[in-house]
Image (cartoon, rainbow, N blue to C red; front, side):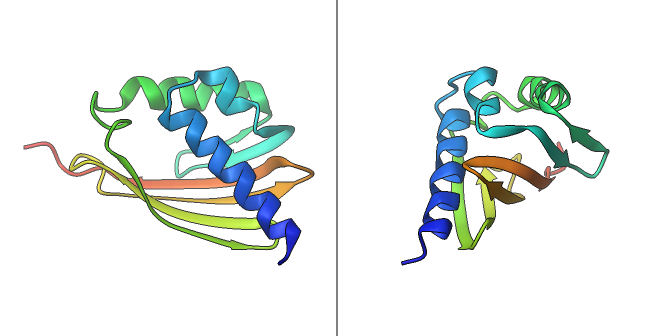
Length: 119
């Protein structure tokens, strides 16, 4: 077994667990390298202070049931790259992230999600 891939999966699963269990921003940010970059449709967030800013706004904007309805749909790992798809109830039917993990920390991440129209 490729231990590098296993390390990548461990970091990503820990990151998801911190989010799902609502362990707080510090626990979520602990998985990132100090100089990590988080890329979204809106902008690039580079460095932990900027990534914290993203998560503060993102978590505050989530529908109340989204975290409890989070479902990891897929996780694929190849070397230091992990790709996930997820959903979080009918309001957030599809999300996707790609992580690059180096030295036990997330070095970069891409993020996209589809939010269903509100009726």
